[in-house]
Image (cartoon, rainbow, N blue to C red):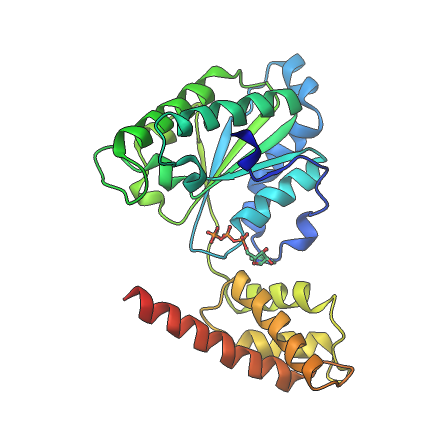
Length: 274
Ligand code: ATP
């Protein structure tokens, strides 16, 4: 059933200004932006654009965000599916979803496909998995390889894959003509956290003084180990705490309370995992 696809075929409003830090990664994906804006030029001159790139790094660091912003910068549709969505109880569903996704993309080209958690399909053969049978997963992976080999380099379809586990991926996925580029999306350092705080504080009513710049600096120093997703969470939690107190500006102390909450959540998560 195609309707279960998590699809966003409208023009995307997310752009690079929504993505803080990740400067090198942005530079790398610019190649695709130039191409998607003007595929004809590449065709005429005979330049072959890579078919795709693997975005890899820890959870919550902005892989999905960067893929979406690349579509936004290029002004093209963004089709997204998670690797685990391909895995179903019923034999044959995975491969047919892959076929549908690429058929859709060919119709919408130029466009970007993003397959999150690509390791759920692309785990090296012979390794077990929790969801779906192994044969089904291999068939799904094979279908993905067939689709990636099947479209010509200048078809206007760019495929991004996202994973936290690049180390377990089947080498077949990383061969030339498939995910030929691998782009690291790493956890932010203090400057990166500061910049991410700025992005997420900007839409909020923050008390001034001290102002958003000072608050971002302070919060970045308080949050070693936090990734973008945690930072977005802190900003929203801070706003919730302030709203409950019915003050009309969010103060530093609200965000500090939010950090404690988020750290509490992270500790719980780690306890469950270990
Ligand atoms: P996962 O591996 O768990 O799928 P991910 O790397 O794809 O995670 P995203 O889903 O892109 O992470 O990030 C979640 C949210 O965190 C984003 O929607 C955004 O609000 C925030 N975020 C993450 N990284 C950044 C960043 N570099 N700049 C601004 N916001 C960020």
